[in-house]
Image (cartoon, rainbow, N blue to C red; front, top):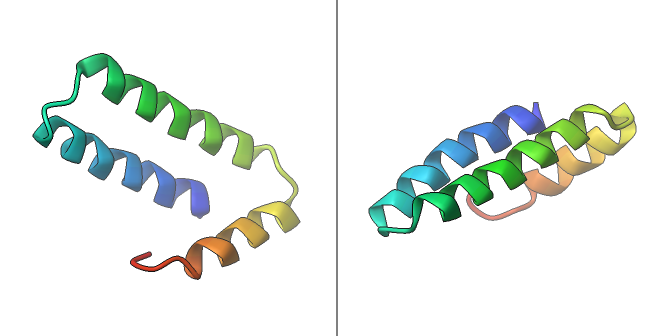
Amino acid sequence: MFAERLEDLAKSSSRDLRAANKATRTIEIYNESIRFLCEWLGQQDPVVQDRMERSANRLPGV
């Protein structure tokens, strides 16, 4: 669940970065970092995933 939300965030972030006229490579690096985080989260114990989800729900605007 949390990883899916991060992927949605990556899409939104890419649009924002393009709108801000950031370099293509910058956008690629940001997206790659989010992808790596999603992969790492997918390999974690469900307890870790649950903690990440709870932490994210406390963030403003999430």
